[in-house]
Every structure is written in C-alpha cells, then in structure tokens.
Length: 107
Length: 422
Image (cartoon, rainbow over all chains, first blue to last red; front, top):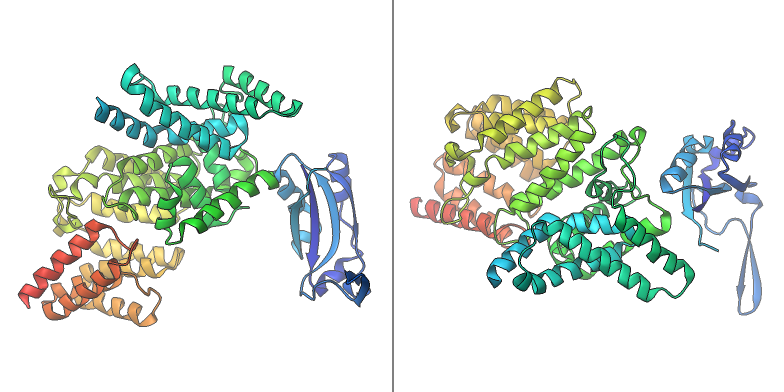
C-alpha cells in the first residue's frame, strides 16, 4: 500500500530544518519503502491559489492558518498500516512534530 | 422439533458467530461479505436443520456454508479477471483453512486475529468496541446502539466508517508480532472486559445474565493469556472475569430477582472457578507489575474467598480501591471505594465519601450514586431519607438503557421496604 507521510510541526519545528533525517532516508531507501519526498520552505513563503467564478484568486500564506503546518512529505510503500506506523515513528520529526499517515487512492 | 432446532441455532449463534465471521474475513478480506454470508448460513440452518437434523459440529457446518456462499457470490459478482482470481484463491484457501502458523508456533485463532484488528489503535475506542461486539459477539447494530445510548443510524455509520478505515488505511488482519503486542494489549483487554460486562450485567436485555457473551469473553481471554503468558494484566483480567463469573448462579433468586453480594448463598459459588481465578492472580502478582485488572481481581478475590459476608476483609478491599483510584482515577471507582469504606469503618464514613462525590457533580444521572446513598442511609436507620434516595435512583434507572429490569425491580423492592418502615 502507498501512503503519504505529512510531516507537521509548529514554528519551533523550523529549527530542525537543517538537521537532515539521521539515516532515516537511507534506511527506507534500502528497504524499498521510500519512493519520494521533500522538505518544504516555511508557510511564510507559501502562496494559495483558488479559482472562483473563473478568476484566479491568490493569497499570501498557507491554506489554513493553524498552529501546526506541513513542513515536508514523503511517499512510502508499505505492507500495511502497521509498517507505515513503524516507518513514521522512526522519522526524526516524529519526536518534535506530528506525522499524519494518509493512504493514497489506488491509481 | 422446531423449538429444539431454534434453540440449537440460537446456541450456535452465540458460540460460533464470531468464529464464522473471523474465518470468512481471513478468507475473503471483505468484512461486509463475511457478515452477510455468516448471516445467510444461520438462516439456512433454520431451514435445513429441522429436516436434516442438527449437525454434530454446528460451527464447521456453518463455516462451510458461509464459505460456499462467499465463493458463489464472488464468482457471480466477478466482472473482471481480478475478481475471478479472488474466487479461485478462495477455493484454494477452502482446501487449507489454516494457511499460516502463528508467531507463537501454535495455530492462530481467527477470533484473536479479528479481536486485534477490531482493537487496532488507529481506530477510535468507541469504534473498536462497536466492531468487536458486532463481528465477534454478533450483537445487532440496534443492540450496540442501545448499549451506548446512541441512535441506531449513528451506530450504523460508526461501524461502516470503521470497516472502511480498516480497508482503506490497510490495517492488517493479524495478531501483531511479538514486539508490538505490549502496546496493543491494553485496547484488547479493555474491549474484552467491556464484552464480559455486557454479558454480566446486560445493559440492553431484560435478563441480567447473558451467559454466552461472558463465556465468549472468558474464552478469548484464555487464548490471550495462553499467547502472552508474560503479560500479567492479561492474567489479571482473566482472573477478574472468572472470579465474577463464579458468583453468577447466586446472583439471581428463583424468581429471577437480583440477590446482593451480602445475601448470596455462597454454597452456590463455583469453587473451581474461584480457585482458578485466585491461582491466576497469584501468578500474575508474583511478576511484580501490578495494574488495574490485577487490583480489581484482588478485590474480587477478597469477596470470593470470604466464607461468609461478615468475614469479608473490607479494610483490605477499601485499601485496594484506594490503589485502584491512584492507578485509574474515576468517579465510579471512588463510588465503590465509598461502599467499601462504609463497610470497613461504618456507614457514616461511606456516606461522607458519597456526599463528596455528589457535590463534585462528576456522575450526573448515574443511578448507582443515589442507590449507594440509599443503602447507607437504610443501614443508619434513616429510612425516610433512604426511601427518597431509592426513589431518585429508580427514576434515573427508568431512563431507557440506563439499567436492567432486574436492577429496577431490586430498587423498587428496597423502595417499598423503606417506605413501609418509615
């Protein structure tokens, strides 16, 4: 099964941006789990797009002003949710932020 | 003959429903299909058994019928190669019904697999309980809704959403590997205990005892304990259930009315179950990792091993409730502690704790709160106040789903006694 890991954190999580993943990516690539992903620049650099009445409406900032924001994402392939939980729990960001596991619609 | 068959099907339903559904889920991976085919099998039993006779192994008969029904339905619904392959796989699986050995080396129990999946922590607790009661115990959606005081439609949606999440999120259908068991156990224990209590005090039904549901909880707990001999809380829970279960026959008189612990005929307690429960508890406590189930079992053991009510070690029980309050703070536990303190140090001490609880307002609408106050007032000879409190308890118990008929009759009887005496 394919899952998206959405790595979320509050402002303090930005302090960890340059820390890397402490071997997590290497392990998950070796296991054939990690299929893609990236870290995101902070929400301050975000632009939100909506199309309303055929007009493109832009706004500055993230789509929802919440305390926790998405700071990165990974696409993983796992046997089941238990493996996805194990993979997410190993990610260093799980120790200071929150990781949401979202199953992906089958293609 | 028909009544005999009806009774046999009813017995098979309580005993085999969970096993049939669990096996069908393993074979098909489709929870709804599993439930429907199990239902079909029981319907067919009602039709066939009067003519063909009751099979020697009703469970095997039902599982075979349900499995054949699933194969038929998958084949009929097969529109593409994938579905056909599924039907093919099903036939292969049907020839070897136990595909893989468990990690403990023994034969995996499908019901245990179903139990761990229903109690997966990625599901909300209320969904875990509802799913277990539906798929393992075979309660209807309406019965579960009544037990949780929600509408049938709400419960139906909750069950559908939970099954959807299992499928969409890829929650595995298995007993977790050894390293995951310690973190997955508490949810299973909580749900098992709830299931046992559903059997013991039957929130929904008119009768106080639903023996088979309690027996099912005990059976599943035995499998758990066998699988995890090093987990003292599992043994604690099994001990607790056995110690309660031992008193089953003495809880109702010949008229079907509730008999309080104090007045129960201790000769009717099941001494073999008590001995087994106490033995399990001793073994668990020796591991030196006490938990809420072990403490509750210790309380039950104090009652079960007292030769008569007057010899009950209430001081010890009150102390154990104190420990329990520290482990799992809860107003219901505090209410039980009040009862024990009332017995150990006299009704005024218990009454003070009950009044403090009432003042805190943490148990609104809970009929056992005024019922406990009423009992203490009655023992103090304050009969008029006791009668008023019994009346209050009875009013709360009359809310649909709040209490069983047996409990209501008991409160009515006490109300009549105290009214007459005051």
